[in-house]
Image (cartoon, rainbow, N blue to C red):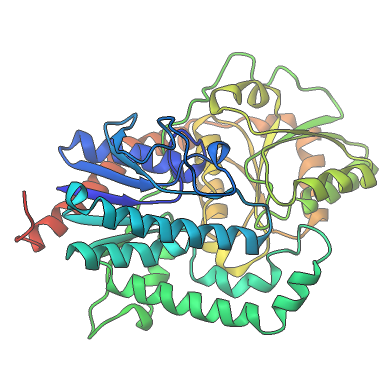
Length: 433
């Protein structure tokens, strides 16, 4: 089949959505499918206005990507960290994607359209592309959308005092946008041939929803976990930095709204009162980074903040760490989310301090990947860290989690992905070859 992928994130960016779909695109291409990608240029090449540069990343003519996919670049816009700025940018990119699809209609002509969310406007573009080309479509939902829209009032809780714009938005506009976005997304999901998700609990939840059913028929929901290959690997130096009375804690990932990492700083402060010196390194970026730096100083916590690093450079931080944080806020939909970093840590056999609930907590515990405490309970996290510091043998992680990740990556995911492609192809027999 010729598959069109609509996304707002693509290589050479190195985030989770980009790595997920570079990996899945390779699986599809290796199986004989063609993949076309419609995506904006990388963020570091974006300007305030439409991109007009002539580099391979911003040019308006299609070219081959790293995995053999054909890439059609759209216009894009540089944005700030506020939710409204990001939403405006996503909408403008979505409109540019529609223009790009129409302008290159004869070159693209897909048999199947796949849209990967977030950004949420991608779902609408995917639906429209399917209409333009008269083909079925698949939504790669990834996280617990639209459920997370119900947490919109709490999105900025971890990034400091609300702005005047946020205060005004809460009095009506936010509820309206949430309601409309939820309705549009549910409509897109209902019309999809299949929905791809990253957790089995989200799959079960979606399968039970009447609003996704049309005359008793619902889209098939398929679990495609974020077990994409990682550049980091275990080294002989791992664990050689341990000292009595000290604990090295690493957080590598998004420092954003859904993580609520201030809870971890409070735990480090409480652990210090109990005689444990917690040394923390945060590797990453996000809307909450600046506030977190301020709170670390306020609490007297030994914390370093490192900007995003290429994945292959994370080994030095993994070697340093005694334990690594997987941390989420106490939002009910996040119980159906498994942070992708969980799989990387399991693969690398690094002890996980999981501040999570639901499926993520179950995976960490059942695979022997570490210890779990509930979100928003800094005392419980401090107690765990003190116990780990006093009993360093608990930091040793076996091979169960690593073996499970490898099996999911190399055996289970290709079968699930290619099987749903075959089913769609078989049911859409009039698709051109």
